[in-house]
Amino acid sequence: MTVPLFHVDAFADRPFSGNPAAVCLLPSWKEDRWLQAVGREMNLSETAFLVRGDDGYQLRWFTPTAEVDLCGHATLASAHVLWQQNLADSAEVIRFSTRSGLLQAVRRGNAIELDFPLEPDEPVDPPADLLGALGVSARYVGKNRFDYVVEAESEQVLRQVAPDFKLLGTVPCRGVIVTSQSADPRFDFVSRAFFPRLGVDEDPVCGSAHCCLGPFWQRRTGKNTFAAYQASSRGGVVEVRVAKGRAFLGGRAVTVAKGELVVEGGGS
Image (cartoon, rainbow, N blue to C red):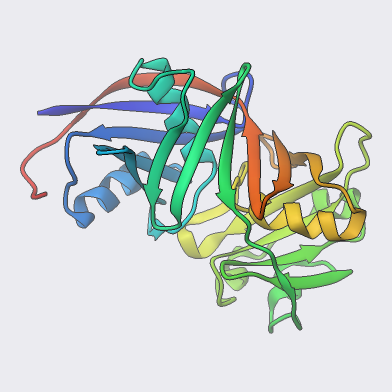
């Protein structure tokens, strides 16, 4: 049998920018080792798997090496595919059941807005090798349930970060977010995100990182809405709104390729 498979660039308004994700539409769940094998085969920062449920879709995300609890760009890509394939009403909310609870997506003109949990950080002392692996000094170091967040002195410093990924992978966390104020007046802040422990040295545009960055910059600026830029080599824009104890993440997506995934054997 075959199942539909899509390659989507998320947080992007043109192909070959933003963050690529694979989106796989399944009639029912396959065994975990098969899902992980597909994630490894796709070799993108995340592959999203969707199964229709009674009230929306069940959604899981896999990097090339692990299942993750929260992923923004692959959720954005999933909503884009469902609307593009007329599998969801464009005027209605898409509901996703995930390991991080109920997530929702709505259309906002040409963009999509995700309703995600806030993941605020708390100040901590930097663990051994964190700053050494990044090669920077820090104005601030914090941590939430997933990641460390490091505030760099400037956007120039942030863009010059060249991590020692082997050393960074020894730091006990999902990943590391580096952020600073933007030097570009079009944006409020910039960031980069590194996840070597998950097989993703640098994530091009990390939606879930902005669940931390929204409240991080809200505390520093008093603002609730932000235009954010992730300064990876591909780059991507994330609109961030902090309201009602949630992070609302806005962006666009572009389908780059679509086809079929051959499914042989395996269990459900």
